[in-house]
Image (cartoon, rainbow, N blue to C red; front, side, top):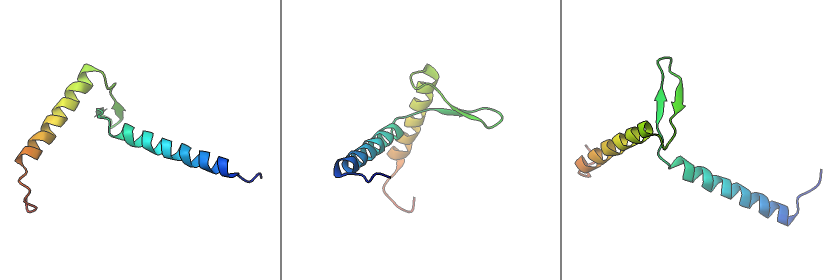
Length: 75
């Protein structure tokens, strides 16, 4: 087996970092997951009207909770 040189090691590290950043960015993108009656999940196309309605409703619920939060840890 051929040992990796410095350039190969640097290229591998940069590739791993780029992949991690891409996954992090994609994980923050809002999405709509729905379940059928058998419990199977599927993601809706993010640009579909149904997905956008669900995302908007979820964001409104989060905003409502944030607005009602007083910063009291007992709450």
